[in-house]
Image (tube, rainbow over all chains, first blue to last red; front, side, top):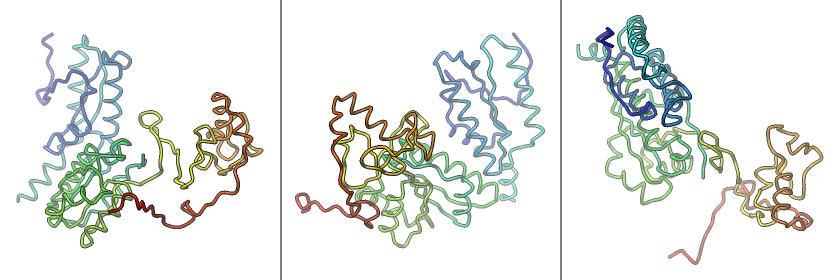
Length: 117
Length: 222
């Protein structure tokens, strides 16, 4: 559809959001990602039955963990849309970028910089 | 299997926050099945702790290992050569594994990472319930496969109490009355006459009430 969305996003394709593990989300933050968002099918429409429901559970767990360690659970989020909704995909990309910009960069990056100094 | 539950991460952080090198040791058996201390949970905890320490500006070495079991000598020996690199071991095994590791490596502090709960089953993913209390004298033959010691709130041995109502327990209305389950089961098995057999006063000396227990098998000992 050639819609514009922020270049801050790095897309990682998976066959189903059910493939995304909590560890993948945590490792992304460990390596310096400022935010992670998971985009899955509409609930009830997962072609593999429950993959997007599992993903939602895992995103919620990741939020709990990130809150507990001081990174902030607001940095991870799950969206549901259908694969035909290109406009929504771009809108969510922008919305997520705005949300992360407000939260600021990953605190681990400044911690690493302080240590290096 | 032994069912355990994850400790809240805040509690774990409080325990390990002053160490400089930590080994997180998981177990490939029961705690893997109840998704509390297997390889996956070890990885998640390690990642979370690494980020916590990084955020605090501390340089802490966190390594992961998942042993087959932590309740057998052979498997615990596998870390004999590497354990000295660490200040502390955070074991995600059940209480049995944590203690056995501590006994084996007396100079190393071993911390628990899960709360060990009971002997139970996976009713569905995410739901585990108790089935056995290891009383040492199994009477399941007479109760149609349902244990009144572990599933009856009052541990009655000869039928329900007066509070059994519509198949539910009076102590906890969410619990099924164990004796209702037993009678239903015996009916299905066509063995209601087992219900008429009286069980005498239980010998609790083989239960936890009798103190720490031991099983010795002379036919197996070398």
